[in-house]
Image 1 (cartoon, one colour):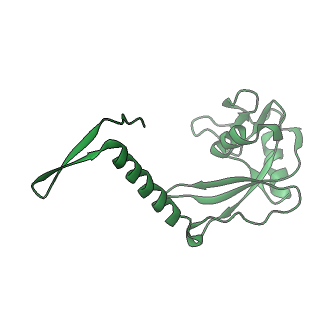
Image 2: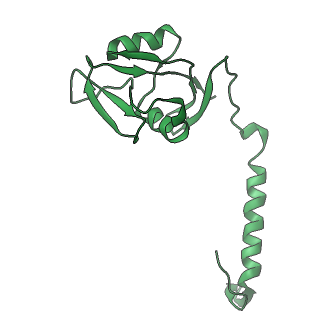
Image 3: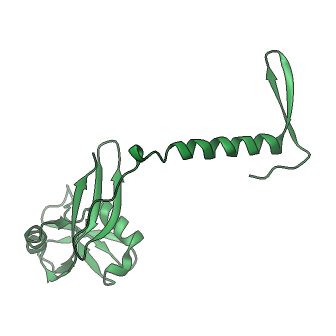
Amino acid sequence: MRVNQNESITLAVAGADVTIPAATLADLWIKKLLASSAQMTDSSMLIKQPPLADGEIYLGAIITPKIRKHIILLPGENADANWKHQMEWAASIGGQLFDRVEGALLFATMPEQFKKEAYWTREQPAAISGCAWYQGFTSGLQSSSDTDGKLPARAIRSESIE
């Protein structure tokens, strides 16, 4: 925001005009914002990161009107295999493959945790049978491929946020 020192704002208050320098109004507005954000740091409103096991990496939280969960990237990677095998592998280590939203978040926040190639997600396109979505870690591309194809996998776990 830029405020010219010579500008003012006139407001009608109880039938009278009140003129306030714009810089003063901007300062009051910023102080009000800072005070309200300070109230929001009440510990009862904070989302606490869940405890992590060795090798786990906290990705973040996904909060929508329907979803409230923490996402944790599990250690290790499974070599190229078909989609069904990768789904079973992820379940065997206590996790699941990430979905498309989680994949985009992983690409945006921690691409260094992945080779620059495509990884299976747990989602399948509704209109195409025998295919599953993958997340690319070179350009961020998401597309689908035949589930018999071979791609690597990483697993995540999630915890509900109460």
